Image (cartoon, rainbow, N blue to C red; front, side, top):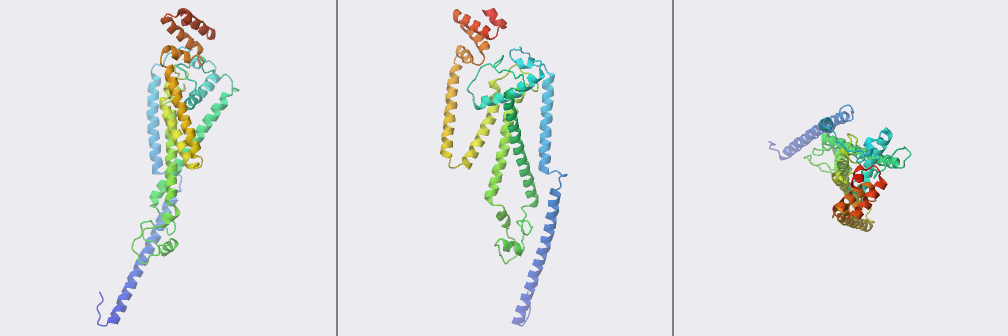
Length: 374
């Protein structure tokens, strides 16, 4: 309150007090700015120290450790139980004495199963015996296919995981910096210096708290949305590969031998991962190649129609046992002819059954059950 009998002196005294009050505000703001800048600089130096892991990385490492421990306990309990008993015809590679043959063949089998998911043209109720020839030498061309497959898989996973890790580091640092202004180095919700307001066309004269627009200028909303979309895509890629690999892992003959070479039934859960990968690839192509969208849409419709037609024809093969065994003759002739002969014999078609049994023995002469039925 200004107390004076002279009006002019009173106004001068009030103006002086207001100027001093504004000066004290400016001085206080400058001190807060210096403190904030020093604090943020120390925090950034701590973040750059690689010896101190980030909290997000610690949580991820703890989760992976718990998951790996649980899987190890389950695997140890499974290996302690009785392993499945099967004949050499069901899984010939498991009975192979040569280590190189087992290694190359078992490395190729996941590639073969992945090809069945992508292009299921030839299907069979049984892939035993010699339906998938064993790889006995390093000069086999299928080894090149296996090498390219595993290299591409490792490259995609490494790239996706590195991007996720960089995004997590950036997200933690942004959170600790509290969206720091890159011009005046003060939090975006604090009062800013005149240089910050001048640089960002925020020339307010009052010193009330105002939001900083520098962060929005440096990192637009479009960039933030793009980074979030890329982060989600990378996480989805890792998840899809997990759906592909983890359910299929017990059937790879790596942990223990199983009684089959290839089984289409074990590809049910991995097919979910493949569908997720195809969805991500389709979305990326749809966004990147906008001019080719009609061509891409035609290709998508064509693939959907082709797979639907294959499903209809395959359902006809499962209509009866005879149709199922006849459909497997091009893939596994001895097993298909042997089962077909048994079905025809039970129906009283003796001549056709005898022909089927003899054809089975032509492909595999040491089938004792076929000799007995014949």
